Structures are given as C-alpha cells and as structure tokens.
Amino acid sequence: MARVFSGVQPTGNLHLGNYLGAVRQFARLQGDNECLYCVVDMHAITVWQEPAELTANTREVTAAFLAAGVDPVRNIVFNQSQVSAHAELAWVFNCVARMGWLNRMTQFKEKAGKNRENVSVGLYVYPDLMAADILAYKATHVPVGEDQKQHLELTRDIAQKFNNDFRVECFPLVEPLILDEAARIMSLREGTKKMSKSDLSDQSRLYMTDDADAIALKIRRARTDPNPVPDGSPEGGTRESRPEAFNLLTIHAALADVTVETVQAEFGGKPFSVFKEALTALAVEKLGPIGAEMKRLKADPGHIDRVLADGAARARALAAPVMDEVYRVVGFLRP
Picture 1 (tube, one colour):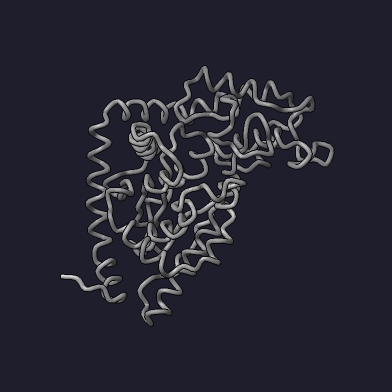
Picture 2 (cartoon, helix red, strand yellow):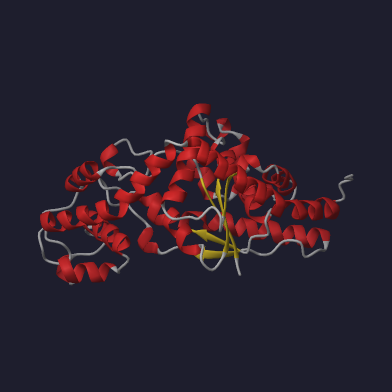
C-alpha cells in the first residue's frame, strides 16, 4: 500500500480548478492508499495573511476535503502547523539543500518577480518545507500537477543527499502521481490563463460554493467565439486557435469523467448556446451538493476543528519515529 501525502494552501475561495485538479483526486486516491491530506497553513504565511482570514480559510479547505468525499477516519486530515515535525525537519533540510538548487526554482522566480530582494526568506526556502511535509511521514507518492514537478524533484534530491551524506537509507525517493492533464482548468474569461483566485474578474472562475444562479451566469458569460462547438475536424479548430472553446470542452469532460473527444462527438457543430446550457446543468449537478455540504460544515467550526485535531494527533504519531531517527542520524543529543 502506498503512503500518499498532499497539501492544499488555505488561500480561500476554492474554485473549480482546485476541485478538479486536487480535491476531487484526494477522494479517489483514498481507497487503495494510506493518505495524509494537509492544509498547509505554514506555507501560506510565506506571503502576508490576515490572521483571522487564515483561520477561516483553513477551515474552508478542510470543509472542501470533507464535502468532496474525503473520509477523515480512513485518512489523516490535518493542518500543518499542528505538527511540529514539519518545521523541525525543514530546518534540517535547510542545512542539506544547496543554494544553487533553490536558485533554480521557477516558482520562486515567478512569485518574487522584480521584488526579489523584499520577499520573505520563507518564500525562498518553501521547497525545503515542502520536502519536510512529505518526508516527515516517509511518504512514497505525491499527486502533482505540472507546476509542482520541480519541487518534487528537489524533494528527491534532498532525500538522496541526506542519505548519501550520512550513509543511511533513511528517506525514500518519493514518486509522483501525475494528475490527469484534463484537470488543468483555464479562466472562463481568457482561455490561455489558468483559473486563479488572483484574477481580478470574479467571472473568470467557478467557486466550489457557487449556487445554481451564479454557475449559470458565469457559464453564460464565459468567453467563446462566433463559431460552433469544435467537432474534432481540422476545420473545427485546435486548442491553440480556439483556447476558450476548448477550455469549456475540457471543463465538461472533466466534470462528466469522459474525454474531450466524447464531448465533441455529442456537441460538435452545435451552437455554444446549446452547449452552455448542458454545461450549466452538469456543473450544478456536480458542484451543487459539494457547495451545500461545504456551507453546512463551515457553519459548524467546532466539528472541523475536532477533525483537524484528531488528524494532527495521528500525524504526530507517524512523524515521531521518523524524527527520532533523523535526530539520531544527524547526531543531535536527545533525552
């Protein structure tokens, strides 16, 4: 049985891309694996967070996990800051990882931009904390999208260097679980940009908590083009020539659990008005119950806090022998 670790940042307002790209996958992985699902609140503070919002967002992400079908009894659901092993192992890895490795991290360059000298040190060493998240439990597999592959490779490098430096076989070389590329959801307003909370237009994304009216309005306003739905023929266009059209096809395919080609076989050549009606009905069917359950769970923060506390206790129990081994290997004097 594989031990799977994955984390989601508590940034609030989870959208369709978060659901299809991560949260839905968590429920699907839980049957045949030992899964730890973490709300990574320590990662979140690498950029400024309003404390009250961080607390609320942590509960919201947890509610999304549960509403999407993650079972907190069969799996370990917790928030990162309740397990000190993450911070402790991250410091060890800060002393194992090399500056050159971190300098090559493209996500840091993208997030820091021209303000590189003024970003937090935490943002720079974020990949070391990510490695600690995974290896504190000796996880064997991590579900990753395209934007996280480089960080996972660094985790493997850190594990290998630690093992080599101390001549031990302490950490496994974690393997990626590559998520379906169909789950890469783009903005409803611009088909070449990933769906994101940071987009200024609220019409660019479907939130997991949107009601039927909001879903219908956003899909109706979603950008397309004057041509019919692509039918798969050369004349129907490509993802490159018609990004908005193919984004809506991708969303329909992902929600229905079919291929884009299957959607094209049903709707190709039809007007987008017809297709958008069908997409709206499908989105309401799939997201409506999840959004309603999220709202119900968020109204009972005590229940969410108990789930996180129970998960954290179980996570600490798993991490404790790993940390004891690390301290012994490094040479820390412990009672």
